[in-house]
Structures are given as structure tokens and as C-alpha cells.
Image (cartoon, rainbow, N blue to C red; front, side, top):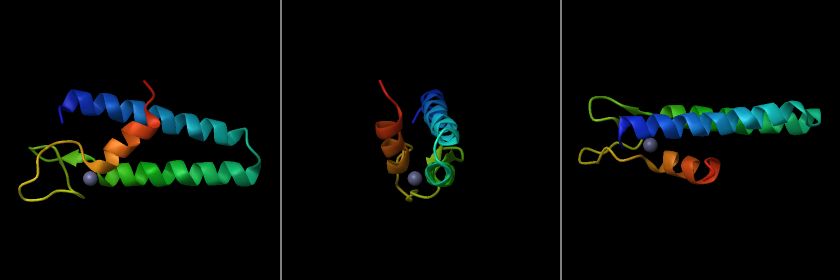
Length: 84
Ligand SMILES: [Zn+2]
């Protein structure tokens, strides 16, 4: 995936997760805690699937003949967390 497009996607996803964290502060303690757990887990997962290296491929999903296209983890995040 193009580096500029990936950065735009990553910023939008991070913005969504930041919004979830902000909403968590207005929720009852247990609900807020669970929302922060979910956003933290997503941040960790996305970090493990960030494109790296010269070919900008996901280390977690990388295959020897794989393309530099965005991996499935980022596709799911883009589909669910980025609104048109
Ligand atoms: Zn991946």
C-alpha cells in the first residue's frame, strides 16, 4: 500500500480509537475500563501489523511472495473504524 495512503488510514483509525478513549471517561467505571481495554488491544494489534521494511509489508502477515498490500488486520480496522 502506498505510504501516504497508509499514513492517512493510520491517522483516521488512531483518531477513532482516541474518540473511544474519550468516550470511556464519560462511562461508568467498568464500562470505561472495558472500552479502554478494547482500544488498547486494537492499538497493540495494529502496531504488530504495521508495515515495515523496504517493501513496507506487515511482518505479522508477511509471506515470501506476499505483496506490499495492506494486511487483513488493517483492512478490518479501516472497514469498521473509518467512516466515509
Ligand atoms: Zn498483518
